Image 1 (spheres, helix red, strand yellow):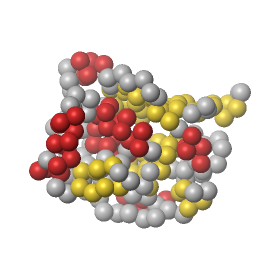
Image 2 (image 1 turned 60 degrees about the horizontal axis):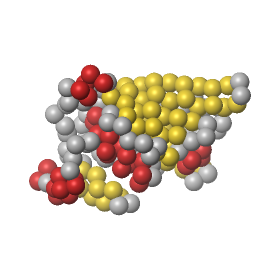
Image 3 (image 1 turned 180 degrees about the vertical axis):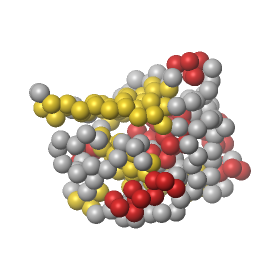
Length: 199
């Protein structure tokens, strides 16, 4: 899937401190402290999101698709779950390291409001993320909502770039390819970096 810079940006209707399509329960989501190469768990008491790469791809040092699986427990008798696949570029856009949207997904932002989105994968406005798309913001939605705090964003960064040394991380933020960068709540987000991984 080809990603390109998309400047469509529309502020959503805000309710309960976030977009109306985002559940306030998303503020309770936290990154698990255990770090395993190619695997990250983000969870709360009633919801879990697993992000992982194919083990064969990790062994070959090729980051092909990332898999995102979630489960939400609504009651003792009700739960929903889902699974989507994302390219590295899509994962970076979902978790605030890029602001790119494919042309075919602009309608999501135009209709619901947001900064970036990808049909069937995610929608995000600032640090408010929904996977795989917008919901009602009420209990019972099948989508998972996450507030992207610094710990979660740093954990996803480490997932995507697991082999960077401290020196390389410092270099990464000032590299020639990162001239067009900006700071948002202490996170440096390059706007024009693309990996050589297949989409």
